[in-house]
Every structure is written in C-alpha cells, then in structure tokens.
Image (cartoon, rainbow, N blue to C red; front, side, top):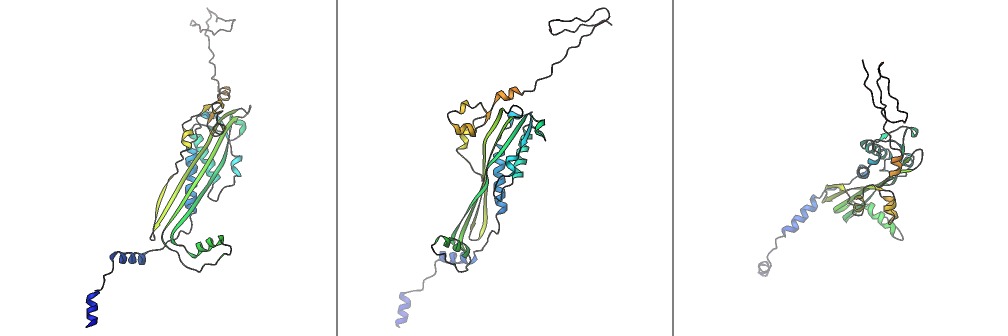
Amino acid sequence: MSSLRMARRFPPKTPDPSVLLAAVCLLCVGCGINKSRLATEQLVVSDAVDRAVAEIDFGPLSGRKVYFDTKYLENVKLSPAGNVEYVISSLRQQMVAYDCRLQEKPDQAEFVVEARMGVMANDGHEVTYGIPGSAAMTTASVFLTAPVAAPAMPELSLGRRNHQQGTAKIGLFAYDRQTREPVWQSGLAKGASRARDLWLFGLGPFETRGPVRHTASSKRKGKQDEIGVSNHAYDPLDAYAGSVVFERALQHNEPQPEKETEVQTAGHTEPAKIDHQNAPLKPVAGTP
C-alpha cells in the first residue's frame, strides 16, 4: 500500500528530447584526419606568387630589348612549398605580356632586369575543439619541466579548424647595360592567399579559399611610376619600396627613327639641283 502511494506521488519522468538528440549525435559522430597538407600549402604559396606578379607593371620597358638576370633567384632559401622556377616563369610571362623583348644574352639587350624574393612561404595553425589525441598531448607536454608520456588515445573532438596562409614578396629593377644608369624599379609587390578548413562532428572539410587583403599596401598602390626619387624624399622607405621610372635613362636610349633620304630625278635637259648649305633637297621632275 505504501509503495503504491510512493508511485503515485513520484511519477516516472520522461527523458528530455534534447538530451536524446545530443546522445544520438555523439554516437553518430565520424572521424577524419588529414594525412598531408602539402598540396594545400603549395596552392596558397603559388597563388600568392600569382597575385604579387600580377601587380608588377612592366609598361616603361615595353618594346625594349631586355635581359632577365635570375642569378639572385636561383639560390634562394625557401620553404618546401616554394618553387623558384615557377616564379621565374611567371615573371617572364608578365614581361612578354607587356611586350618586353626578352634576349637570351646580355650583350643583345638594352636593359638588364634583376629580381629578388623576400618571402615565399606559408604559415599554418590548427585548433581542436574537444580532447586532442595522444600525439597532440605529448607535444604539449614538452613545455613542462618533465615531459609526460600520454597514453594512447584517439582524438575526441566536436570540431577542428585548420588555417594555411601563403605569402610572397617580389622586387625588380632595371638598369642600362652599357652606362649602368638606373632605368626603372617595380617597388615591392606583395601577394597573399589563404585556405581555411573546418570540420564539425566529423563532417567536412568546409573549405574557404581566397586572397588576403592588405590595407597598408592600398595607399601605395595608387601611386603609379613616379619620375625620379625626389618625390619620395620625405619617406625613404617609400622611395625604396615604391615604383620609380628614371626618364633620363629611357630618353637617352630611345631608339631614333631612321631619316628618309630624298631622291632627285634629273633629265638630260635639266641637271639636278645641289644645295651647298645642306638644306633638304626638293625633288625635281625629270623630262622623259
């Protein structure tokens, strides 16, 4: 009789639907691991190179014979994702697109163009929301005074985020092959690209790809090929990193058009007229 009264006083509670849904989601959670990100790293770095090269304006050297000196690019120390040959080919393509007449030997060119690479690498970081695996825990224990060997256990995470960003910085300048006068400098062209991957409950990756916008470089981007360096005297860094055209060297090597020689016609009845003051001679119609 007492047990029946207790059952009536405390009826059985039905489980909360949200708790059941969370339990089902935890049971159905998958597991995925990226074995290698080398392709993503190369993709963001090469995309950063493309964006940096696209900003270089070879217009002042259009139609001129140019030799591209790559000796300062061949021994550049880069990350494993870097590819110097890709940079050289991209710059040559940009030169050809601006009608620069590339020469195979320096003796055949009017101007010599040199290039340098300041940056060509990628940065990345990964964040795990949950309990990391044993490998990550062992790595984190290195910062302790006495590293602790973590027991073998899988990763138990609700989500994971990976971020890769590639950056490239390229600079070029040109000088006269014979006089060594400065002709042109491109300034420092920078490009950056990123890739973001997100996993939620084992589903993914949800990818995001695109460029990285730099607000600091937008101020300099509006300046186009200043003549000389006097305009940049107020800021030495701007004079070094900005685009400059040295008109004196360009005008000195400007190809001169060939002068047309006038031909006179003379007949047996009227000889040709000779101007002893080196004045232009006017053709005289001859008689048949």
